[in-house]
Length: 135
Image (cartoon, rainbow, N blue to C red; front, top):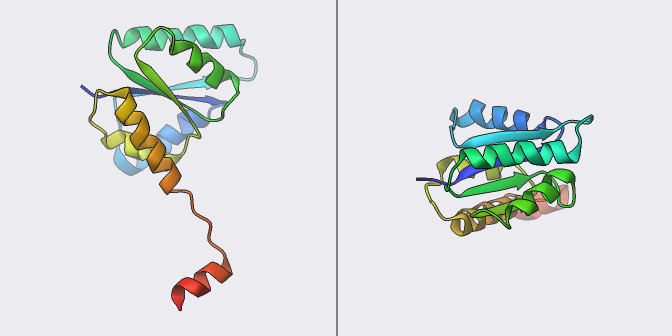
């Protein structure tokens, strides 16, 4: 069994990034989106998160949030006290694509792989850098 993944964000970013991933690799039944809408109360958001989490039973899960310190992140951290889960921040398409192919039931292993993926896909390219590479 693989780790379930909740993608949480401000606004509908989480829904749209999942759609982008599906465009590339198809649908994945282990992914769940949880958008925080502008008019939504943080307590209501936390309850929605808890409902998704309870649907997993005792299965492990990871919550990937858009940014550190926001409501989705703060609600996700509250899940750490009760469940076998991990929380990551810095949601990106490469991270999500990597999650599609992981087949682990360890939140620690999955979290580490996704963190390494996100870090390795951050690059800066400048004209000077490209000129040096092409020499």
